[in-house]
Image 1: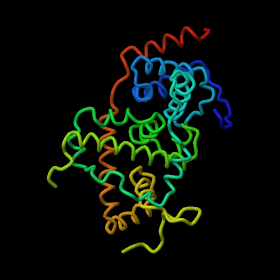
Image 2: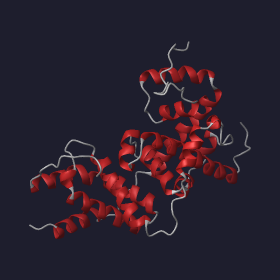
Image 3: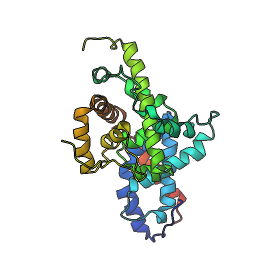
Image 4: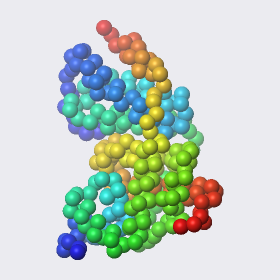
Length: 197
Length: 89
C-alpha cells in the first residue's frame, strides 16, 4: 500500500460487517481474476483465499466508502506477483520501452488486422475468445481483464497496477492489438476469412 | 459540422491520434464533448468507423464469454473458517 493512508479503526463487529458486505460479494470476480492470472483452478482458489485473509488482516488500511473491489483486486494482483510469478521460470516478456515507442510512433493508426471482421467474431461461439485472452502474456491479459471484463476505469487500473495512466493506455492498446491478431488467426483457421461480404 | 475546438487536444498541445480517440471512446472515458466530436469525426473517417464496431464487438464478446463464472462452492466457507482459526478471540 504505497499511498499515505490514515488507518481506520474498526470494532470486531464492524470488521465482520465490512468483510461480509463489501468484500465477500466480489468473490466470483476475484476467482475469475485469479483463474485468468494463474490459468489453474487450484492456484486460483489458493490465491483468492490468500487475498481474502490478507484483506481481513489489513482491513484497517481499507478506507470506508472507497472502492472495495479495486482494493481487493490490488491485493490479489500483488499476491500473484509475489507468490506465484516468482515460481514460474519465464520472466515477463513485455518490453515496456517498446510498447511506449510503438504507441507514440507514426504508424499508430495502421490497421493491424484488416481481415478481422465483426461477422467473424459472431461465429466464435466456443472458447475462442477465452483462449485468445489466456494466450496473451500476463501483463497484457491483466489490463484486458481489468478494463473489459471488470469495467475498471483507467484511474482505478493505474492504482491497482501501480503504473501511470499513460502506461495503462498504451499497454491496453498493445494488448488489444495482440488479441485481435490471435482472433484473426482463429477466424482464418475457421475459414471465415474469405466469405462473402 | 465539426465543433471548432478539438476536445482531444492533450496537455502538451498534441492532437490525439484516431486510435487514441477511439480507445477513450470505447472505454467510456470520454467527456460528452469528446463523444460529440468523435461522432462527427467518425462520419468522415472510415477506419475509425470500422474499428469502432469491431472494438465494441470484441469488448462485448469478452464480457459475455470470459466472466460470469462462479467461484467454487465452499470457498467462502473455507475462507471464513481460516479467518476464525487465525483470529484470537
